[in-house]
Amino acid sequence: MSVDWKLYRAAVYRPTLGRLKGIEQIDPIALEDLLGVEEQKRKLVANTEAFLRGAPSRNVLLWGSRGTGKSSLIKALLNRYAPQGLRVIEFFKSDLRHLPEIVDEIRQEPWRFILFLDDLSFSEGESDYTYLKSAMEGSIESAPENLRVYATSNRRHLVAEYRRDNEGTSVAKEEIHYADAVEEKISLADRFGLWLSFYAVSEAEYLKIVDHYFRGYEVDRERLHLEAKRFAAERASRSGRTARQFFDAFQAMEILD
Image (cartoon, rainbow, N blue to C red; front, side):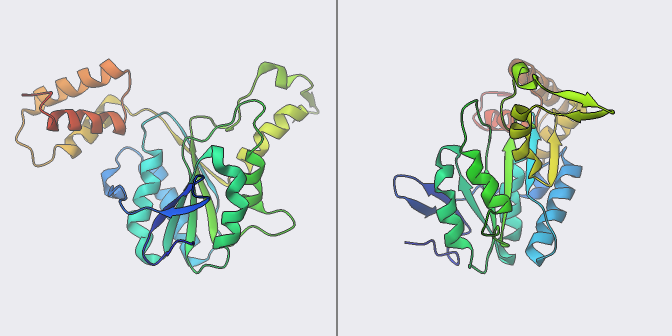
């Protein structure tokens, strides 16, 4: 049974069902809620709008520090552009071998699909990324015009790299010739035409995000910032996710009571 894309804006592949399952409750996050990633947001929005128009657009790799808004940006895109025909299909790495069947299923649909792969990375010996390569660039059959891959990862090259992989790498006439092992591992990341990097925010940017969450609240800002910095220090992380967790803790009356 296929997903009714008029009814559902997003779906996830369920291997136990052997098919896509429509998602009824979607994170309501908006692009305006994501601070400290303005340049990444601008480029991602521009690429997505081009895709929706049928203009040249690229597959996107969002990589970098944890909790910096990579996944949230993709969810926010869906909330903004679903009325213009955008749909999202979430896939997990362990299910990629089923991707060709899903690509066949949506190829003739009138909607524009983002294949969302969250926290994507591959370990040594895993080869399921070959299915992803075909979805992005095709094989004998061309890649679907109505599908783009947006993947998030903590790794720039997606596949784990080891020192031994570089054995055989050489430099000739100032040109690097990578070993076959390295070439194979970076070939997947090379298929993403747009790379967006994400880093931990500065303290000032972190507090700005905290203030955004607490807009409309009657709180002592000096104490709020002090507690927010302490909260981040305990987690060794300054990010949008940390700011949201701090806000949730406040809501639960754990802080500033």
